[in-house]
Amino acid sequence: MTSNEPPDWALPAWDPDFTEGTVRGRPASETPPAAAPVPTAQAELVSAPTPALRILTVSDITRAVRDAIRGDEGLRDVWVEGEVGRVTISSAGHGYFSLKDERSQLSCIWFRDDRLASPFDARVGLRVVAHGRLDVFEPGGVYQLYVSAIQPAGFGDLALRFEALKARLSAEGLFDASRKRPLPLRPVVVGVVTSPSGAVLHDIARVLERRWPLARIVVSPCLVQGDGAAASIARALGRLDRWAERRIAAGRPDDVPMVTILARGGGSLDDLWAFNEEVVVRAVVAHGRPVVSGVGHETDVTLADFAADVRAPTPSAAAELVVPDRTEALDATAALGRRARIAVARRLTELDATVATERRTLVHLHPAARLATALERAGLLLDRATATVDGRLTTGSARVAAAWGRVPVLVGARLDGGGARLGAASAALAALGPQATLDRGYAIVRRSPDGRIVRDPTEAPAGTALAIRLARGEVVAEVAPAPDAGR
Image (cartoon, rainbow, N blue to C red; front, side, top):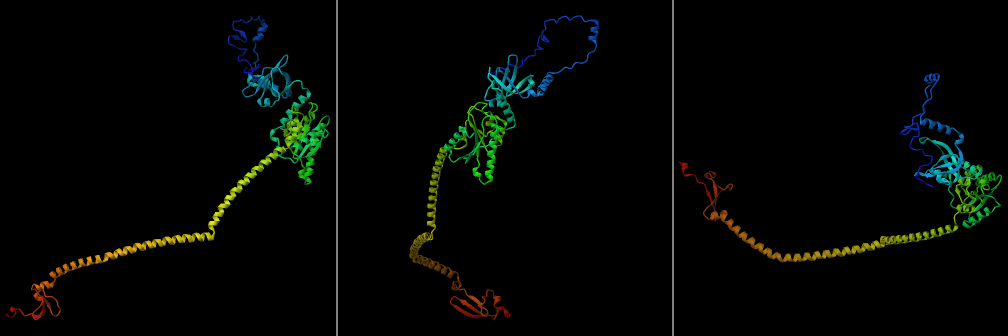
C-alpha cells in the first residue's frame, strides 16, 4: 500500500506558463503570427485610454476558491464513491490517495488517527465510499477531500446512515473513552436487557451460574428486532434504572444491579439495526450503571457497542466479562490461605523468640535472682578484700621483722658515731672554752656588784670589789688607787 513516490495530484516543480527559452508557453524561436491590419477607427479606439486592470496574485485566487468551497454547506459533510488510486503513507502515518471514476479524480488525505481507527484500509483498485469534508490546501493550491472514514462500496443506505449517525454522535462525545465506567469486580446482582423468549437469556444465565453462582439476575425484557425495537430497548434500560431507585428507596440496596448486559443474538445489518438507533445510543449513555454490550457475533458492530462501557463479542462473552471465574477465585483464595498460614507461622515463631528473650530477661530481673547475684558478688568482693588484707599484713610483718633486725645495728652504729663526734666536739669545745684559757694562766675579772666582766680599767674605779676567776678557783679583790693618784 505504501509508496515513496509523490501522489498523482502533486503539482510539478515548474511553471507551465513561464520557463527558460519560452514566451508565455511558446518557444522563443517561434515568431508570433503577424497582426492583422487595424482599421483607422478601430485604431483610434484602441489608442484611447483604457481603465486599469486588476491583477490578482496566486494567493488571491487560491483564497477565493477556498472561500467558495468552505461557503458551500453541501461540501462540509459529503460521501464520495470511487476507485482508490495510488496510495502513499507518510512517515507521520497520514494516508494520501485519490478517488477516481471514468472522467475525474479527487485528491484525498486521511489523517493518521482516523486511518488507524478504521476497520477498512484504502487499497489500490478498491471501490470505496469515503466520508469527509472538501477543503483547499493553500500552499499547493489543491482542493482535496479530508477523509474521516471509508468503507467498501455497495453497503447501501443503511451503511451510509450508520456512518453518518456515528460521526454525529461521536462529535458529541458519546463514544469518548473518558466517559467509560469500570466494571464491578464481584457483582451480586446483574441486570439483563434482552428478549425473554430467545436463547440469549438462557446462555447468559448458564454462563453466570457456571462462573459465579452467587450472582442473581434481574431481567428487563424488550424487543430486539423489528418495528418499535429501538424504543423498547430504551424503555427497558430506563425501567431497570427506575426499579433500582425503588429498591434503594425501600431500603433494599442489595437488590440493585451493579452492572447491565445489553444482549442479542447474531443477524444481518437489518436485524441489528435497532441497536444503531440514536434513542438506544443515548439510553445506553444515560444508564445508571456500567453497560456491557453483547450484540450479535464477533464481526457485528453496532453503535450501542461504541456507547457501552465495555463491548463483548457475543452475549455469552458479555456474561463472562461481568463476573469472575469461581475456579480462579477459589484458587486465589487458597493461595491467600497458604500465604496467611505461612505469615502466621512466621509471626508465631518471631513471637516465641521474643517471649523467650523476655522470659530470660525477667528471670535475671527477679528479686531473688538479683539478691543471689548480689550475695555472690559480695562474697567475691569479701574474698578479694580478705586476700588483699592478708597479703598486705604478711608483707608488712616481714618488713617490720626485717626492720627490727636492722634497728640494733643502726642504733649501735649511730651511737658509736655520735660518741665519736661528741668526743671530738668536747675536745674542740674544751680547747676553745674559757677553762682552757684559764688553764694557761689567764683570769676572768668581774665586778662583784653586777657580775659584769671588766675589760677596761676605767670600768673598775678604785674601791670596786672584784671577783677574779682563776683556772682552779676564784679570788676576791678590791681595786686600789693608782700610784700616781696621790702625787
